[in-house]
Length: 111
Image 1 (cartoon, helix red, strand yellow):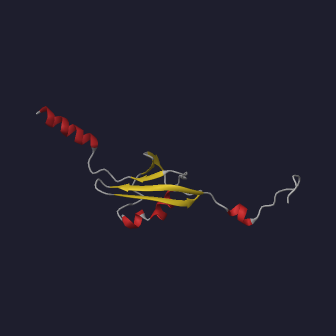
Image 2: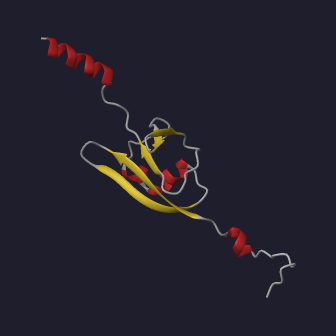
Image 3: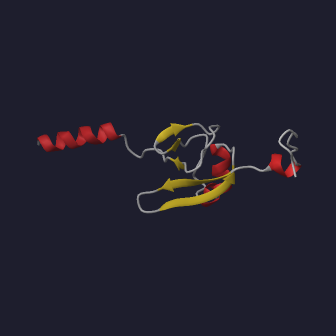
């Protein structure tokens, strides 16, 4: 029993306990998607979460140097730390420029 005036002694297991967090990793095509919820130790970077999710093995076309990354539709860096409940999104590059598509559509409607 510890008295109030005694200092608390930490054991190795007390200091090594790490908080667990749950995050999701998402990569999508129009017709299919990858969504994986994983539990990891905090703190952890976006890059490490993506590597541990297995998405890079399943979709080899993903290049983390080229593909943009975000958390809940907000741009993020691979070095950013994730928080519990975050959804990490890996974005595909655009096939067509949205401005160009709108311009062509407007021209067709004028005819």
